[in-house]
Image (cartoon, helix red, strand yellow):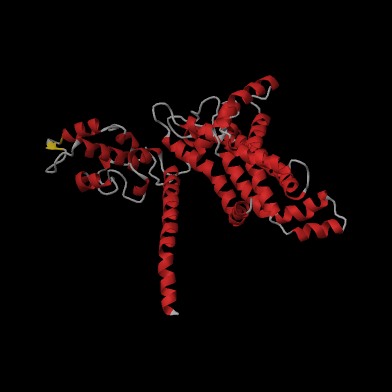
Amino acid sequence: MKRDRINKIINQIPTHFIILFMIVIWVVPTLGLLVTSLRPAQAINTSGWWTVLSPPRGSGEYAQSCETCHGADGKSLPNADLTNPQLVQQFPRSVQLLASLRTEINDQPHMGDLPIPEAQAAADISAYLRQMSGIDSSARFTFSNYIDALVGYRGTSTYQRDCAAGTAPLDIKCNASDLLNPRGMGRAFVNSLIVTIPATILPILFAAFAGYAFAWLDFKGRFLLFSILVGLQVVPLQMTLVPISRLYAQLGLNGTFLGVWLFHTGFGMPYAIYLMRNFLGSLPRDLFEAAYIDGASHWTVFRQLVIPLAMPAIASLGIFQFLWVWNDLLVALVFLGGNNPVMTYQISNMVTSLGAGWQLLTASAFLSMLLPMIVFFSLQRYFVRGMMAGAVKG
């Protein structure tokens, strides 16, 4: 008995290893993205997220070259208080700092017997002095990236600072209405919800009706029609962009949410009908026969019997369709463009052509994945049951 138990544990080791490996490769990048999105822009540009708990940049060089005279807090010399922003602003870069360190003070070398630091060390000290004096944010974490991303603010400072100083651009009102700024992720979040919710509900609703009909109604050509629908799953989406775009242009649907809803519904239907038909076909026939004998109509059976029993398949299908539509860029780009930008479109606008704005990109990326994670984890208990039901019978 004990030997069998040991063999069982040993046999499960590869499975546990694979599960742990998959957890690690999912959790580590997600954690890195979250930590990076909460760091100040200067810290993101100079160090990786794994150094978030390390001492500030330049603290070691400061302790080696400056702490003896100026003290650990920079306040030991009243005439050279390094916490004074006006004083530190005289050394914005290593060149000015090195020039000061090479001068003599009271006919004595500035550094005394200590060696003058190298250029990189001087740059690190200069960065540390800016943090010490409060010129740069010294906080390890900040929500400014999320606020700037939501309102689409890309100034030289942050949205909060510029609003407090009254230097914000004229199109920024510095109130809650900025959340609907067309350049921000707040407006894109609303547009993504407008696109995704109907484009998720409509295929599930129509597929539930069609799945019931294919599973429990007898009509001529049922199997042929179902085979055609299954075959439509392999049609590439890109192949239909041009004809549907021309059709939408004639109907005036280009740039409208209705056009995107119809497109996602049409392309989601084949798989949705396939899944729902297989799940509903696996339900016990006795349940339906008993309901029909009691005088229940097809609508009553569908509403009171099929829908409650099909919740695992509906939840599984809802997760798939929601994730597909939410993360879609191609369809939103072709049929909505920049008039009603969704989150996948707006994220690309967070980074400039010169590579600036990485802090906004990380915050925007985490915002875009937050709602899909909530949907998945809230419905994940139905996910496996729905997938297995759609895969076993066909």
